[in-house]
Image 1 (cartoon, rainbow over the protein chains, first blue to last red):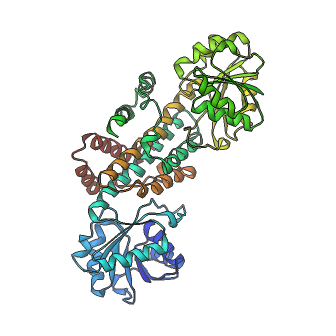
Image 2: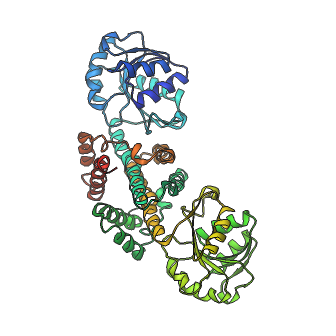
Image 3: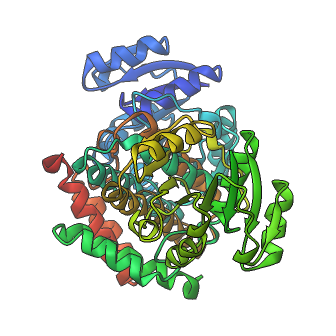
Length: 256
Length: 256
């Protein structure tokens, strides 16, 4: 396919590279910042533009990977070219695109991307939604050129997924941060915990989290919990968090 | 070394196997449950016993891997053999052993072990503490026979480490569970989130968590946070957790 990338951030960068590697042609890369557009365009052998007036209409797909708030405004400008437009946002309905074109879809890669780390796109779940059956089929085919994990997810499901991803990714990373800060206070290196963090994530690749829960709370080990709360006495926020999470873990058995 | 394993749980099992693989001789495996003792003893070609009276004194080291509450009582019985005794507990001081023998130490593997999953011991951090310099040196040498990551950690530091490990392992696993439950309510498979969970843990192997934090809270994206809290309206416990974690993330910049 001939694909135009709108955006130059993390998602745009990883998606453009994955498309290029799969043999698709990247026509243009648009960013408000021409330098950012040029950097990405250079990597995927595309033209860099910083003005939507310069859009080359000879494309099959506009893939919008910009801030959620800006998606609809950009789509309203692109709609006149009457080509397929998808956004890549987990938090955004299909509707903002549908307000301007019938040729609309969503192409949401469920992964955390950073510029410093390469991602093997082959295992990234791609959640697709099309405005009609034909668009869904086109996006399905496109998705399978870059990953083995393609899911048809409607806007309501995507909303749940986006929330769940915060619990699965953003919040655990914050807990890693807290553990690192606890160690740093005592001049202990974070390397002590890195293998534990990795093993914890690897365990749930083949098991359900409820089946591999460990620690004082799941054992209802009140003595250890009391010692830990005592250690956090001068950190009321961490203490509150420790209590809330431990109470939840203690109740796990009943809920699952 | 000639090593006697006291216990037959997850830590005892993985530690005994690692010692055996490194060429040490496992003399005996003790468990109150003879069947459990026999199962592990068979794997490491040792004698199984279920009574401390049957201890063979021809050993160099007693490695105690049983419930924290039972460590001191068992150590008081083993002390008469005048051999080196270590416990393997992150939550326990050296003192309960010192109450009964001068030949005391700690040999704490900082990892989450489950019976269903093999662990590459080579990368597991081993935290050692000896009652004197010679014991520390002996434990240091022993530790390096089974892992590349050996740390000398005193009892006060180990207490911090044990608390930090709850934040780095037990609590993230509970958040995985919550994300899985959110998906399950909408018949969405947990496989959607597994690659995200793994990538999040892999990211902090080379980076500090503060440098790779993503999500609505770190962007102070109030609109998305409000939508998520709305979605959790009928789950007051998750809503409270979401608020507490997001407030913490929003403050990260100032704290680090």
